[in-house]
Structures are given as structure tokens and as C-alpha cells.
Image: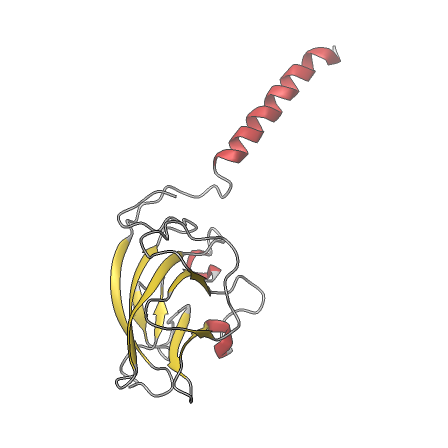
Length: 190
């Protein structure tokens, strides 16, 4: 009698394996279209308090670091030597010490060629030097999608740095569908 169960068990194993391969994250269908935005950030250390010096994928743009409840992935600043830098959240002593940290991952690809964010390799605890034309993938912490335990992803390009005004202009495409990594404009796919 044990023999007839073997093919059934094998079939069940194949079906389960196929289902597991279809969507490893079991994410809900993407519903928010990706959009291209531009923003200006002022320096964290010397910029006006009324101006934003950080970027938040979750909030969809530049934010002020001191506002209650503001979450962000990095802040912009200029060193004493005049170098422009991005400061991931953890370099500011903020963010969780136990969960996934927000981070930046430098890319050598053109902005348009940055179609899908990588899962790993993000700088989370070091200052990142930045210049006009530099491009990065961004990853949020888990806080924005805590129900699913996955981050949001975006791509960023530095358009201009004004050393006199101490500002940096960027363009960003963010995928605000939790866990989805495709970064082309108007995409609601994974």
C-alpha cells in the first residue's frame, strides 16, 4: 500500500517547489507607478533649518532631518575640506542597530540602465563621497514596509552641486511598492 503514495508525494513536492520559485517574497501585486522626481538638498551642517538636507524614499523626496517622524536614507553635507558627502542614516548615529539599515550602492551604469536594484552591497555605516554625475541605488530600512519585512528601493543621480549655495540637486526614481526592485518610470511590476 505504501507504493501508491510515492507518486503522490513526488507530485506534491514538485508542485510545492514550483510554487516556491514563482515569487520568493510572496509580495502583493505592485500598485504604485514609479515616477521621476527632482529635489534639492541643503547641507546638514550649515544649511538653513527651514530647508531639507536628507532624502526619504518613503516620503518621496527631500526632508528635514529634525522633524518628528521623518524617516530618511541619507543626509547631504560638505566636509571641512569642501568635499560633498552623503551620510547614511547609521553614520549619524540614527536607525536600528539590529535590523536592515538604509544604504547607498554606487553604480557605474547610466541612470536609464539602472533598471533593477540589487539586494545586497549597500553602504550603511560609512560616509560616501559624491560628485556631479554620480549614481546610486538606495535601499530603505524595513520600517516603511514592516508588515512584509522588506525595504523600498530607488535610484538616484546627482545633477548639480552648488558649492556657494551649499546645495545638491538630484533626480530619483523610486519604487514605493514594498520589496519591489524594478526602477523604470511608470512600472508597476516586480
